[in-house]
Length: 85
Image 1 (tube, rainbow, N blue to C red):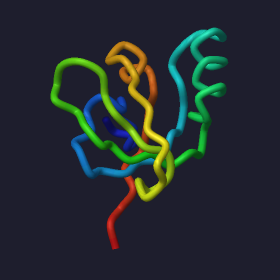
Image 2 (cartoon, helix red, strand yellow; image 1 turned 90 degrees about the vertical axis):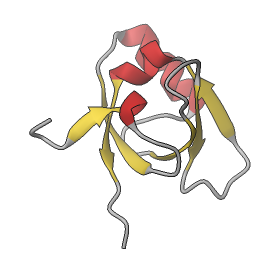
Image 3 (cartoon, rainbow, N blue to C red; image 1 turned 90 degrees about the horizontal axis):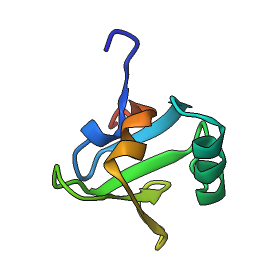
Image 4 (cartoon, one colour; image 1 turned 45 degrees about the vertical axis):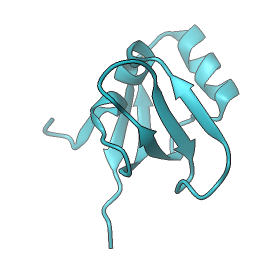
């Protein structure tokens, strides 16, 4: 994508990204907010097998909190990859 944003479902395990926008309705945004997935949050992909839920961790992956989100939801979460230094 030309603006550098891509759906969260396209990331591979180990990659980190920042949530930039949610392409969904009010109920989806509310649900993601309840889960702590808000604009500006950094997430790390723990598991993405290209089927089933995607396992993510908030932050850089060092925390113990992990979430499983469905592919439909992940397709609506637009992220920007964090460049590794």
